Length: 358
Ligand SMILES: NC(=O)c1ccc[n+]([C@@H]2O[C@H](COP(=O)([O-])OP(=O)(O)OC[C@H]3O[C@@H](n4cnc5c(N)ncnc54)[C@H](OP(=O)(O)O)[C@@H]3O)[C@@H](O)[C@H]2O)c1
Image 1 (tube, protein in one colour):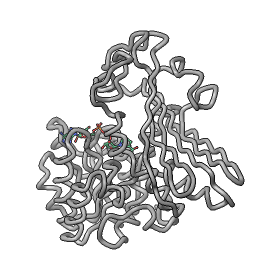
Image 2 (spheres, helix red, strand yellow):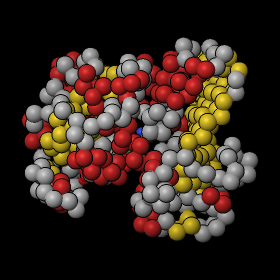
Image 3 (cartoon, protein in one colour):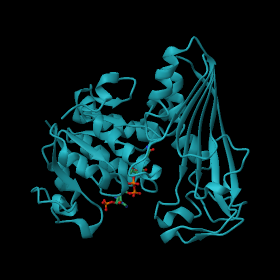
C-alpha cells in the first residue's frame, strides 16, 4: 500500500479525492490546499462522507514533513511555475515521488532541455538529492496524444503521418478565466493579439514535448516544429456563467497546434477548443456532427482512424478532467518503483500504467 499526499482540491484534485479514499492499494495520508477556507476540515467530511481522520492543511511544511511515498501535485501551475517548481523540488528532496499533469518540459526532458532548461534542471537536482522520481503524465491529458498513437503504430507497416487531436467544448467550465485575454480569449475581438495560452511561445514551450515524445517513441528525430492557430467568431450569444457572455462576432472557437517535420512521418498535435459547437467552422478538421473527444489518425499502411468519446455523467468536459486525475493516480505504483530521476512513459512498462484491482 502506497502512502499518498494530495496537493490541491481544484477541478482535478476534487475529482481525484474520492478515488484515493476508495482505493485499497493507496492510503491517503495528507492533503494540502492553498485556499485557507479548506484548511482544518476532515477530507471525508469535505466529500460529504464520514470523517476519515485526515485533515486538510494549509501549511506546506507539514506535508513536506509527512512520511509518504508519493504526491499528486494537482495545484495550479500556470502563472506560478517557479513557485510550483520550488514546492515540487521540496517534495522530491524529502524523498517523495511526485506525479504532475503539467509542465511540458518534464514530459520529455530531451525537448524540455531546449525549451525550458531550468524546469528540467531544478527537478533533476531534487530527484538526485532525494533519490526520488517524477512523472509528468502528458497533455490531453496524457495517453490519448502520446501512448495511444505510439502503440497504434505497432500494427503499421508504414506511417506517413500521425495526427492527434483533442476537441473540447469548454462552455460548462464555470471559470472566470475563460474570457480572460491571456487564456483561451473567448469573447475577445477576433484580432486579439496579447500573449495568451495558445500563442506560439506558449504552445511550443508548453505543449511541444508531446509530439517530440511521440517522435522518440516511433524512433524518428524532430527536424522542425511549426505552430499554427486559427480562430472563429461566435455565431450566437453564448452565456458562460462566471466568465460572462461571448457576444456574436467575438472569439468562440480556436484551432491550434504544432506540426512537426521529422526524419520519418509528420507528427501533428492539435486542439479544437470552443464554447459553441455552432461556431466551429465547416472547414476545420473535426468529425461531423461535432463531437468532443480524442482522435488519432495514422496515414500509411494501413491507415487508422481512432476516435475516443470520454464522458463522465454524460459530460465530455468532466470526462477530460477525470482522466487527468486517473492517469496520475494509476501511475503511482510505477513511479514509486522507478529509478530516481524524471521518468517518462517510455521508461515505464505498459502494464504498470493500467488500472490495477485494489
Ligand atoms: N495534462 C492535461 O491535459 C491537464 C488537463 C487539465 C488540467 N491539467 C493541470 O492539472 C492541474 C490541476 O488542474 P485544475 O483544473 O484542477 O487547476 P486549477 O483549478 O486551475 O487549480 C487547482 C488548484 O490549485 C490551487 N491554487 C490556486 N492558486 C494557487 C496558488 N497561487 N498556489 C498554489 N495553489 C494554488 C487551488 O486549490 P486549493 O485551494 O485546493 O489548493 C486550485 O483549486 C493544473 O496544473 C492544470 O494545468 C492538466
